Length: 170
Image (cartoon, rainbow, N blue to C red; front, side):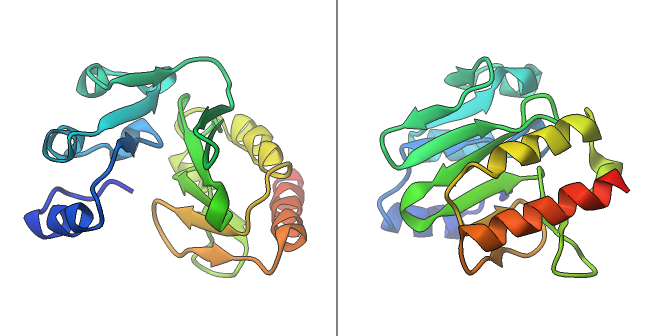
């Protein structure tokens, strides 16, 4: 998600202690990243596959296919498909995965959706990236758009991923 910079929102974040890093999940949603970084004095992170003019000055450019860890609480997972540099962020203490535009809840059901019409790289790569998520311990999907999803446990999350993969085979 790329929230527009607003004084009200930045004030709330500062009251919570600010931010050390700003994680940019992919190139589509990076509006106002410079304003946020300047105000919060945080370092930005993006995958090199999504570096263009607007993100050329980002402090951390991830290369390769990861995963990458920030301390023991955060894991970054390269999930290409929507864009070449799409990356999800796993916040381990809450078992929460921030997915950007990689995957979200369907508008019409409780199923997962890749939103094929918005895939800028490859749906097949996006499906391969979904398979990577089967190995991760999380219960929350927190997408850049749409509704969050909480699964009862990791097995339920994996069943939802397997269902999505099966639906795209048909």
